[in-house]
Length: 611
Image (spheres, one colour):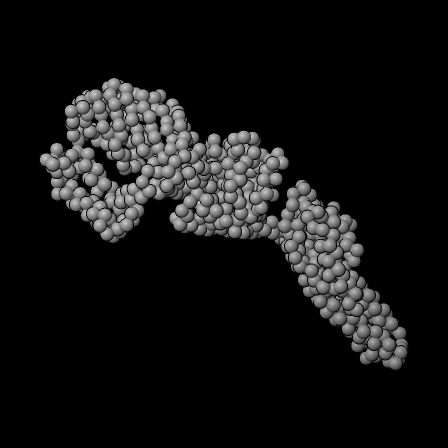
């Protein structure tokens, strides 16, 4: 046996052993094939070794043995690399299949070739069922065609598209998806297919939308509060009802949240609405709109009757949901006095959604109080007044009840104070103070009674009352009480109201509080004495409440008579204060009165007001 044959046999045997080792390690059938092939080659080499051959003739067999051994070696390297790549691909596949995002591959026409299991959790479709389908399967209809054309134009040009899209799940519900679509290209840059990754962001998007909605509501509320703050600040400077209404309308119309505002009232002669002040809309256009059969007349009436704001739609019909309202009707009232309705029209959708109805209710009361105060001031300062005379026979009133029960005459001399605690100075003719005290002892409206002085035919008393009397009601609504005389339960109340005020509102308010009150006359006249009412009003405003009470009580008790009918100690006892305190209050009132007489001018009180 020559050396070439021996070497060839050894190489082939080594190759068989090497192949067997790799076969046992990798369990790859390709190594089994090589093992069998090398075994057959080694067997053939052994058989041919018995024959006489030359080394040169066996040289090709040696080369084949060497190549076979290298084949085994390189195959082992290939198997190792193949296994490494297979493991990596298996890892990639597991990652894709276990990913929380929906991932799918499509061809260039958009037909789905692969979808991972997460597709079902995002859009609700089975992954195997969507293969061969188009992603249009979960198209929501929330986006227009231009949206999809722009998206496909972007990825067809080789770019990555990234954005949010609304899909429709298999169940029919909508979901927000954060989607990324990327083209897969070959070596030349041509697009072979597309890969899409979808992440369900519905919860995050809904949370974001809720936050944005809350911010919008907060902004609307802040804008409304700013308007209300401006209104409250300007109401202080407004001197007339017209100015107050102008402030209201202008402030709302100037706000970005509201479009227009107007103040009106129901017309008595027809079913229309009388518009007094407007802003943001021409008065003529508004009247034409109101005359076209809108429901504003009903809304105005209902708002006044209920005393509460009403939300309305574009036609003026009431709506319960503030989010669907395009306007709100706010009654302007002060107790039982109605001063019309403020209508505010929205300038944006949902303008009233976050604004509580109570905000507008409080606004209506604030404006009504301001109008009442302005009209009261105008009545006190007006030269031209409307004098109203009422019959009080059937009125539930402490003074009427006193006159009827004791068959006496009661004349009101003076009424002061307010907010449920008023001091009424009355002259009673035909009855004794003790009888009066006995009558009012069980009265819920008269707290105390004190006798100031007793004359031959009459006595002068001071009664502590609440606001239930008809004179207190008239004063509360801006009327200047001229007189109240009741004889045996039959009496007359005379009041003055400035002609510039809404006389009808005053009459209706007083009659609403006292249903038995009857208006018997209404006369336009000039007030007696031009400067006297202004002087008295200004002087009384200069006094503190206790100073005014001390001066009135002392006057009606005869403290200033000579000789004095009542001592300072007695007057102080009536007021339930010490004599020194009474003297201090009285001296302060006298000093202010004399300063005005000697230093001031009619209608003006100069100097400090808290002395």
